[in-house]
Structure formats: structure tokens, C-alpha cells
Amino acid sequence: MNYLEYTKGNHFRHYFNFQLNGVRKNRNDQFLTVYGHCQRQTESFRNESIRAAQEIYNASNHKLALFLSGGIDSEFMANAFYFANIPFKAIIIRFKNDLNIHDISWAIMYCEAKQIPYQIYDLDVLSFLNGKRILELSKITASASPVYLWLIHVATQLIRTYNIKPVFGCGDLNLTSEMGKIFLLDDEMSNTLFRYFYKMKLEAVTDFFIWSPELMFSYLTDKKITAAIIDKNITPYNNLLLKYEIYNEQFNMQKRPKYTGYEKFLAHYLKTKRKLLKNYVSADSSYRISYSKLVSSMRFREK
Image (cartoon, rainbow, N blue to C red):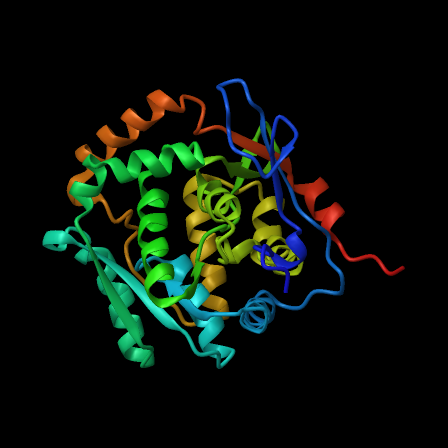
């Protein structure tokens, strides 16, 4: 494995003003993303997820540590590794005074039910939001996302202490409908983890759901997605329902409310985000890729 292989074959790339895998330097920089194409015929989303877990494990030089938040994305990722019979430890971040216990309790229940070893990392999140470290990480990544910045903070501490390879259940595919056309929406803040680990040359899988073109293609062409597109039923709300239904069809998922993890300190969170956005005013930009063009470009073609 190439030490800098953050996705399979480094198929995913992003650009700022056509600078490969860089960071935003000013408010006028244009953000865009590019994905590779499938190298073989794809299988079901479940099979491709398990295969992605196996590939990540085979390519790793360090013990895998999967970050579980309590949400369905990280639980789905963990299921892929679990059903691939791959050993891993789960990392669960617990905020001081149990400010996110309503969220992480789902991750704890999942690990205990599956007998997966997990480590609780205690974080004084309010002190982090008020401190210098978040400003340092924001500067490195040109990001205004407190969530991704506290993930980076915890992951780098664990890398130094335990020499782990962090794996994050990020990169879930967000479809949107505009004027009757369907697009994949890539937002700049969601790219924060990739920018940091790429720039710092630290081994990690920052976005499990885009690990390989085959994994992405299997989701984008799932029968529930294609049916929703035909019915013109792609909306933000329906996206969440679709994602849960697709995930649950592959693995039996715990049903839970949708949480952010910062409900109990929302005002503080938003205040910090606004402060960071003053430095990086355009850091919440997004890039839209035509669904039909993306699927066509990713599709496997016999040589």
C-alpha cells in the first residue's frame, strides 16, 4: 500500500483552483471533486461494503480504530468490518458532563451487543471549542467545522499514543434535486478530515463510503435510489429515510432518532462555527456533480 492511499488507488481527488488536494487560500477559490471509475463489475452494496472493509484491513500497517458516533453511518461501517470478521477497536468520544450521552449510547449498545472492544475517549468539548487547538486545526485545514476539528484532535492524540489507523464513517453520498435534475452534493466542510490527514501525511481512512468507486457505484445504483429518482422523490428528508432503508436492508440496523451530538450545547457550537467562518468565509461551499454523468463515468467498461 502507498502510505498516502486514503481511498483505494487514491481515486478520490479534490481541487481548490485546480490545485490537487490543497486547501482554501482565499474566498474566491473554487472547490471541486473528482472520483475514479470501477475496475470490475460491482456487486451488492452489502458485498461491496464488506469487500471495502477487507481491502482497508489488508492495506493497513497499524491496528484499525473505527470512530463510532452513535449515528447510522458509523454503525453501518462497523457492520461491514464485523461481518468481514476483521478485528478492530471502536473509539467513542464522550463529552464532559455527558453532553452527548444521548448520541453515543447507541454506539455503546452496539459494541456491547456485538462484543466489540471499545475505548471511551473523554473530551471537554466546551474547553476545546474555546481553546487554541481548534483555531490551530482550523488554520491547517481552512475549515470552519467544529465536529471534524474535534475528531481530528482526538484521532491525532490516539495515533501518537497507540499508533492506530483511524477509520471514519464519513463520505456518505448526499443526493439533491435541483430544477428536475439530480446531483451528488459534495460540501467543502465534509472534506475536512481528508485535507488534514493528507496534508499531515498521517495514515487514515477518512471517508469509508467513498473508499472505492465500486462501493460508491453500488450505493448510487441501488434499486431504492433509482426508484426514488424515477419517482422524482429526492429530497433532504427522503434522503435520510432512503439511507436508513438501504443500510437496514444490508445489515440489521438499530433504529434511532437523528442526532448531531451537540444538541445540548447548540448555541455554543454555533457561536464557535460563526467565529471560524469569519476567517474562512467561503469554507461552507459545495460542488455539485450530475448524478447521470457521475454514474456513467464510474461504470465499469470491458477493455
